[in-house]
Image 1 (cartoon, one colour):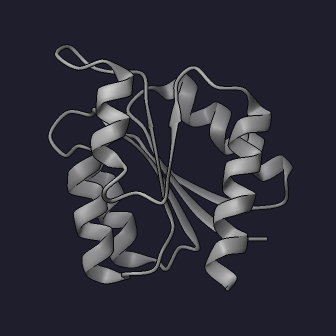
Image 2 (image 1 turned 30 degrees about the vertical axis):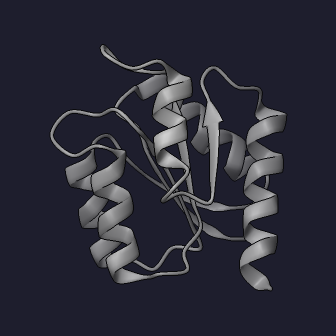
Image 3 (image 1 turned 90 degrees about the vertical axis):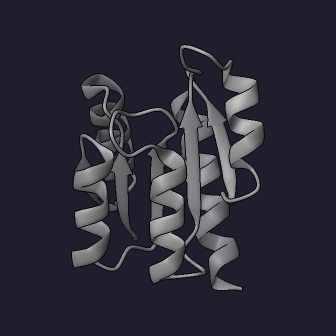
Length: 125
């Protein structure tokens, strides 16, 4: 069981991820934007962070930079379906420099669970 933070400005995506991971036995906090996500990171220790790339005000790069400044080893998974100016492929390629893993939206629950488990296992080593 791990404590996980999910940050995504799309309610349905965020809730689906939260329920999926809770069903796997994890404790999941969620934030609907980067500002709330940063506040959660400030106030809690997480075993893993999942963040959307494109959000208003604070984006995935802001989250990754902030999280890494507080904990250099926390695994970060970036999810994206792309944005107004970038395809998901380009967004995720850019995120790979900072994230431990990336997942393109839409994704299957099995992909999410496998990626989370891989990152949690790698963090133990």
